Image (cartoon, rainbow, N blue to C red):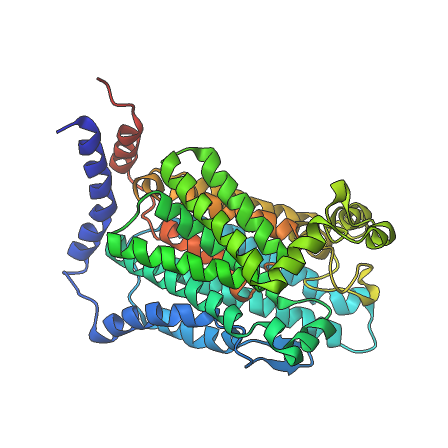
Length: 453
């Protein structure tokens, strides 16, 4: 027996130790029958949240409600009734930053009626509903992390993530606008396409699962299912017309290769995805059209909108960023209000096509810095010793790279399945125990020491 295996065994023992301590303190109480039922139910319900494109959306005066918006409350109810961990988990380290951001966003939004003096309160209500949606989906992601207790629950949740990727990919393939002229016309009439945002959610899930697959995580049955879920998700992404999601997925996969851990496995996964891209280009006409217009844009379009640095159509992203970035100083303290666009906000209803810049504009410098602090916290959590032992470091960071690139490409994390996907890939790490005692810290440091020959 080598010292390295002993250290890993000690580290896993540290993960289980708080459970035994808590069980002794609670007189060995076991979860009730009701809690065990909801422990299984929320895992089954999780993939259903990724069903946004079944033609079941409802138009309202404040936007379009997707199917997931109706399922999120029952999902939260299931999480509330499920058993929670008695130990202190790492997700608690993230909660103060999210609560602080919600407080800043709420102050900025609640002050809108006094600062702008609209003749009606409709813009205020619209922003307030968006903030409520962000809170609901954020709470769902954090509560999911709280319900992941130990390796068995973590493995079951990874099965649920495969289901989410497969469900989302299949929903794209079933509801292809290219095959449905009526749906294509509806999408064309919209100011923006929700498909772009959900394609980033797919990119986050695909990068996370692909990195787990490259690390040979789980049993052989899970890895086979993961390969199938990735394939379905990638094919669904091809017909989504979500170029931001493609760029995000590419960035996440490049990070996976750059880390050079299990190079052959990572290269094999990336090569397989590239070959899927070639097949998609030949099979799906909408994918071929989007690729061609991106790499070979119309010269007149580029000249008119300045949307083609290096001869590639970027949708005018860089020009828009440079134009709106100085406007942060117009409302540096409170911002314009959460999702306050158009009207007197002095920036367009379609947004700046950069989530991070948008947060500086809408919630002020404090809100923008808090968003960056949340991303930094997620990155640091991925590097925790417990995450490394569970083979979650590279998968989570690959997904974070995809999320950041997707956010900079114009997709927003205001709520919905895009935010849920980001918090879902963090949930297995957030469910790990926080190192609270001196004994735990010493064992973690021991596991990180290099093995001597």
